[in-house]
Length: 476
Image 1 (cartoon, rainbow, N blue to C red):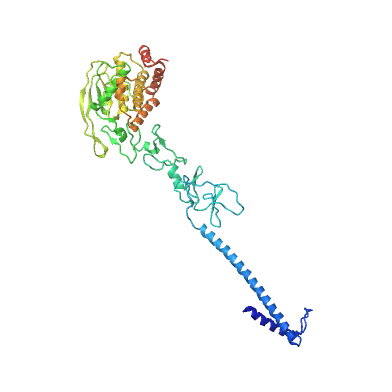
Image 2: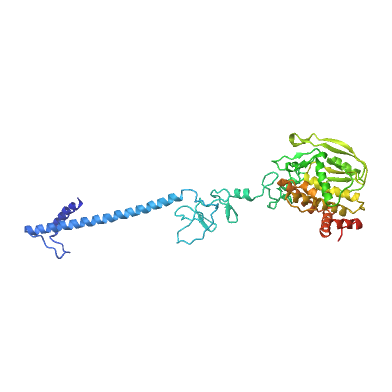
């Protein structure tokens, strides 16, 4: 044992000291050893007690040293654990309905960093300092893909952070035709075209690269869709094709609806006027044969004829062949004879039911005024009042589709029109055709419609027509 060694070592030292020095000059209480046995025993006991005290003192100091070493070890272990946790890239806590983490202004003692994502202390690990807040690297995440943002640059939308590709995918407009990102112009700005009604966005280049439009709704053909090619070169989208009227026989029920609509307005057409559906070429040829008439440019889609002609009418509708082409259409010549001031009404084939009906209502108004002996009118007055009737018919169709009883139709006409709600796209088409009439910018059809509509709203249809008959113009 160490304390026993101390005892004997202490005694040897003392004896050695005494052997050489006789006594300690520094200790006034020291006496030289006595020659008697008691004195020697007493000295020996004092040396043993002193050695034991020294041994106990050293053991106490070694114990404190062990405790200090253990405390330092614990601190080192805590530091190592903090470093390991900071390098552990586990995802932060997820919160319901929260894909981003907002910086939170919280005051903590100096030296503490609180993550704005998970709201926990960052500790001794790596961290990001951006947006006036501190973040764990794995907590600073993209609002689009929810993956950590490790790039040097990122994009912002409001308070949300995005990877630059994620931001472009979400906010950079894509072309509805080619499905590519719309390119920027030389000034670095995103420039695109958009249909005023359908809000179809597309690259400006598609206006000049031959991309076809639907001849009915005017939407451009997207690359992932196939429009139907009609025999006369027009293209028809599949939604418009769904309700398209394709031959003369198919159009007769719609013709009866228009006649009943006029009867409901007390404007019955007494004479029997033939209705023929024709191709574009036949319509243009018939227009050339007319001495007088007003035509809606750039394309005429309906005519009210007064001259005797032979017209090629569609006897049987075409079928859809390979490559989305309409094939197998059968036509036959039809000889028009003059029994009254109107010989026939021609309408372009292949248009949706609501557009065909509005054209037919327009041309029927031409026929009614001629048969009623109206004087020759200016273009804006005659075409304007005809557009008013087409607009009124479309309103009855839209109201009947929504279950409304409004509109100047007779009870028999209303019973024919109300056949349940129409498909959503057909209702949208009706809104578009109505929008076309209302927003037409041409002086004849557009300004004429707005003047006629204002007069009818103010004075009523009957008084407006009487004023036109007597004066040849709309009432003020």
